[in-house]
Image (spheres, rainbow, N blue to C red):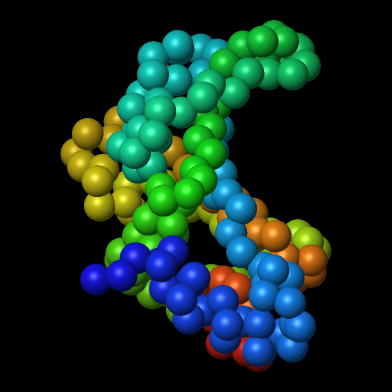
Length: 182
C-alpha cells in the first residue's frame, strides 16, 4: 500500500497543478510541516501535569515534544516568565504524512456526528488550523489512563499562496471538509 507522500508525488501533484492551472510543477502547493500543540491546564499549580502532557503528546505523535514556556509574567494567572505552560511537536517529512493520513483515515471517522471540518479555518496564506477538545480521540491513547481531559491544536502549514490553493491541496490529500453551503 502506498503512503500519502508517494501518492502526492506520483498523482496528486499533477492533478492539483491542472486544477489550479499552474504552468510550473514547482509552483504546486505542498505540505511544509504539521505543528501539534497542547496548552496545559494547571501547569503552574502542579509540575506533574507537564510530564503527563509530554507523555500523551509523545503517544499521539510518536515524537518527543518540546516544552513551551511563558514569554511574559501575568500576575492574574500567577504566571512567571519562563514557567512551562504547554508542549509542542513539529512534524516534518515521513512522520508528517503518516500523521495526516492517520488523521484523515482513523481519527475523523471515529468522531461521533462528524460532518466534515470547517472550510473557514484557513489563515489567509493556505495554512489550516483545527482543534480537538480532548486528545483521547486518538487510538493510541487509552481513555482509562487519561486523568484530566486536555485539548490539543493541530496546525497544517503548506506552501500555498492563498486559502484556495491550501484548500485544493488538503482536499486532494483526503481531508474531509464539510459540503459547500453549510
